[in-house]
Image (cartoon, rainbow, N blue to C red; front, side):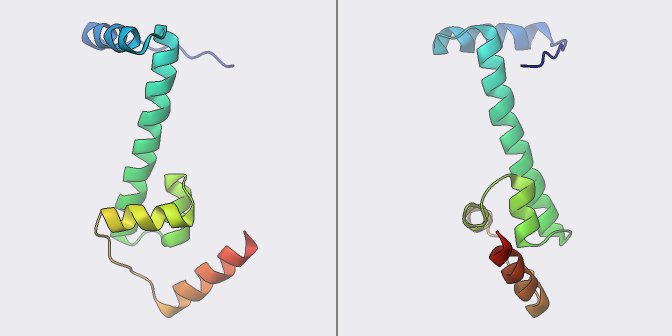
Length: 100
C-alpha cells in the first residue's frame, strides 16, 4: 500500500484521535476510512454540480460520482435534479448502456 504524508492542524489531529478511539481503530485506519468516505462525497457533489450545469449527461454523472446508473438516478432524485436530456442524449445513453 502506498504511503502518503500530510500535515494536519492540531485540532484535526485531536478529532482524529477521538474518532479512532471511538471506533477502536488506530489513527491510520481511521484516516483511511475518512479519506475514502470523504472522497466519495466529493465525487458525488462534483457530479451533481456538473449535471446541474449541463456539463455532463446521466452516464458521465454516474461515472464522475463513481456509482452505477441506477444509483445516480437515486442521487439525482434526492437532489431534485431535473433531466436535461435531449432525444439524442437518450439515444446515446441507451447505446452506451448496451455496451456495459
